[in-house]
Each structure stands twice: as C-alpha cells, then as structure tokens.
Amino acid sequence: MTHFIKKFLFISFIFSNLSISAVIESDSTSSVGSDSSWQTGISLPSNNEADNACAVTSGIPFSCTLPTSGADTVSCQAISLPDGVTLTNSCVLAGTKNEDFSIEVSFDDGVNDAVSKIINLTASVNQDPTASDPLNCSDPDAGSSWTCSLADSASDPESQNIIFLSNSNTPSWVSINGTTLSGTPTSSGEVDIQYSISDGVNTINHTYTVTVNINTANIILGSNAVTSENLSDAGVSADFLSALNGSGCGNDGTSNCLTIFNSGKSSTSCSLGGGASASAAQIEAYALCVIVENATTTSASVATNQPASNASAGCSANVSQQINLPSMCGYSAWRCYVSNAHSDWNVLSNTGPAYNGGGPAAYAVSIPGNTTATGTVNLSIAMKLAPNYSDHLIKTVSIPVNVQTAIANAVNGKKHFTLSSGQKHDYGRAWDSCNEKGGRLATKTETNGTNGNSIFQPNGITGKLVRGGKPSGGWNGLSCYGQGEGYPAHMTKAGANKISCNRYGQWMWCNTDGWGCSQTAGNRAYTCVDLPSCPSN
Image (cartoon, rainbow, N blue to C red; front, side, top):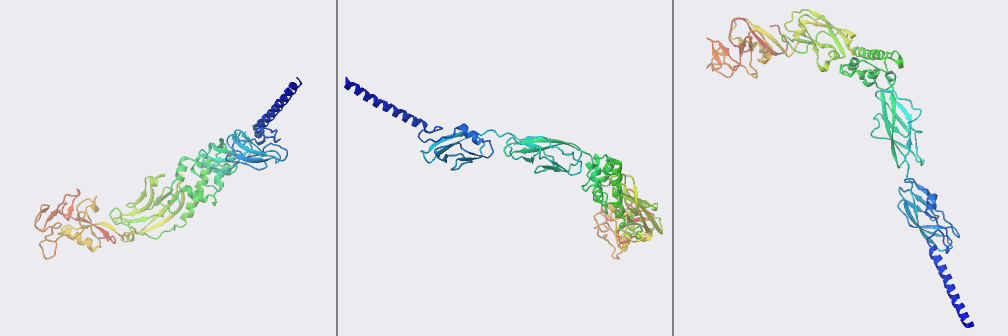
C-alpha cells in the first residue's frame, strides 16, 4: 500500500511538471509577434498606436517615431517598406503616401531576442483647400492697370501651402504672380475672373466677379493707349469713332488717326476739360484738338506759296496737265477745297471705301489742252481736317499756274490736231505730223470717244503704212497694212488716189460711229500720243 502511494505521487509529479512545461511553451509561442513578449520583454506598437503617432494624410509628408520600449533602447530594422517610405535605426518612420500601407519591422532592445512585426498604417483623406473672394480689392477701371492681393482669400485644412494659378477660363488680360492678380481690362462691365487654387494635392477653381468701371478720362491722362472700346465706354459718338479709326492722318495722310492721337496725347498743348471726370463731349473735343494740333504741325512742311505749275502727265482735250495738291489732300481725314480754278478745269477727287468719310477728297486739278484760260491762274487751296466730318481749317495754300507753261511742260501727252480741208492723202500727213512732233499716230482705242472725222491707226499696228505702186516715195497709191494697190476685199477704191480702209486695214478716217470710214470733204481730225510736249499745232 505504501509502495502504491509513492508510485502514484511520483507519476503525478511527472505529469504536473509536463503540464507546467506545456503552459510555459504555449505562452512563449503565443507571445512572438504580439504587442509584448514574455521571452524578450519588448513592447511593440499596435496599428492604432502607429496611426496615432504618425497621423499620415494622403499626399502630405510625415515623420514619426514608432512607439516601442524594451530592457534597453529599442532599435529598428526594416524588413519590408513601400516606395516613398524610410525607417531609421532609431525607429523614425517618414515619407509621403497617398494610400494605406503596411511595413514589416524587426525590433531589438539589445538584451532580449529581436522580434519582427507587420504594422498596418492608414492614410487619411487629404481635404480640398477652401477659397473666398479677396478682401480690400477695388474694382478695376477700363484701360487702367489693376492689382489685387489673394493672400488671405484661401486656406487649407492640413495647412499646406496654397498656390494660385490661372486656367483656361481666366480672362486674357489677367495674370497671376504669386498671390497677386493684375492686368489692364479693355472694356467696362461685369467680368468673371476664374482662377485655380492648389494645395499641392487637390485643386479647386474659384470665380471672383468684378465690375470694370468706365474711366476713359483716366486713361487719356495716363500713359496707357486709348482704345476704341474705351472711347465707346465713355459715350463718344459712333461717327467720331469711325473717323478716329480711319487711316487719313499723319504727314502722308495714311496713318491711323487713333494712333496719331495716342502718340500725341502725352505731349500736347491741348487740355482735357473736366479732367478725370470729363464727359463724352469733352473727350471728343480733346481728341479733336490733339488731331488738329498734329495736322497743323504736319502742314508746316507745306509751303504757303507753292512753286509755279509742275507738269506731271497728259495733254489730251480732257487731261492736259495735272496740278497736284499737297500730299495730305485726298484722304478721309483731310478736305482740300480749291478756289479760283478756271471754268474748264477739273478738280480730281478720290471716292469710295478707301476714302470714305464725308464726301469726295480732292487731290489734284487738271487743265485740258484746249483750255481757254490764259496768263497765270492762282489756285487757292483750303486744307481742312475733318475727323468728325466737321471741317477745321488747318492752312491755306496758294498755287500759281502759268497756263501756257503748264501745257508746254506736259509730258507723255495725247492731243488732237486738224488737217485743213482739201489736203490730199491726210492719212499720210497725219502719220508724218505725229512723227515730226516726237510722238506717234494714235490707235483706235486711244481715240475712243472722239466725235467727228478722225484719222487713227488700228490697235496693235505700230509699223508705218506700206507704200504701194509709186516708187516716187509719196503717199499716192497708199495701201492698207501689208497690201499693194490690188485693193483686196477689205479696201474700197473710191476714185483716183482715193482709198478707204475698213477696220481690218491700217489707216482710217472715221466719223462719229467709230467705224463708218470714208474720205469726206472738210477738215480731218487726227490724234498724236506719246508727245514730249503739247505743241499748239
């Protein structure tokens, strides 16, 4: 009995020790990888503890020390890290992530065995920045430079740096530099200024509505150029704007009048009535003053007393000699009025789209070769400026014209002459007469519109008429172009030494219908062209 009891107690002791060992082994196994280790005595961070320590926000750099402790200072070694994340030996985790991520780290306190653990961290959502209209920014004035600070108009929940950017809906006249809006609006009215705001991760758009004020007077008084839109805003009339937009100003009459105004408004003796509060009428008066002042300066180069007639072209019955007016004449912004011209002289004017603006614009006077004027005629030219179609006298110029000198000096002229009745073979005499004068006999086209009998050469024929059958060299037996005395079908023999050529021939004398050709009694008219002067006979 005693032996049995001892054996039972021994067996119980063995099983008891086995049970304790199993418990010890079980505890040791379950502690590996947990928040604390019975074997090592190292405290490891939980997911929540790591999240609280690091406070990772999507897109924002973070840096934190993983919360852990041990028998001595704990060091960390990364086993697995995602891109963009680093871990130092002193357990400092840092980086930038846009999403949740996991790390695997080995922790070691230098006393107990190192323990590894996978830690899951959460990246919270990055919130949009917020924006409001800027404060203390005045509304811009049309045509004037404007700035506005955006510094206090936006913020970010994560306190990230704010960046202001233009976008496709930002008005073209607006620029953004740092936190400053700036630009020069071209016209008045309500304008939506849209721009973008970014915190480096998220971007929002904001629209700031401003009212652009009409302040053309300030633009005129300032250094910025005045535009048609500015003047329209100020209430300047459409007619005045049309005139200013015309190209009839400057020393050659071809410069844009608004350009001339802008170039002269800062250095003029004119003054803007009403100053910065000028009315539309005062602005018009000022602009007109500047244009007139420029025209007056320009016209200073034009001699008040011009030299006597300068022949330039022509000596036909309609245009013998052209007397040009000063170079500014003939354009929409100028009006040059001619006085004292002889009754059979003509004033030449430009009209049409290129010279619109209140009527014909005179540029020259023509003297017909058969003028009845004699002696010297003094033309008086009143040079006026009409930018709003109300004439303003700039200068009066006198141009003396010696009639005979003017006609004699004409070059490259065309003039009609007459062969007396009874002269034979007038077609040959007409040829010779034009040659003797240094010109040539006119063609049909060059004598278009001539009334009465006239002798001319058909178009396209420039050689002298072929002589036929009379070796004496005279004009008897004269044939049409390229033909002998055989009188081909296109010629008519009207008797001895009388030949009439139709339109296929080289020579003609024609009546008013232009083609009815015959040799008739009476004087013959003939026309010479390319004359070096305009002889009287």
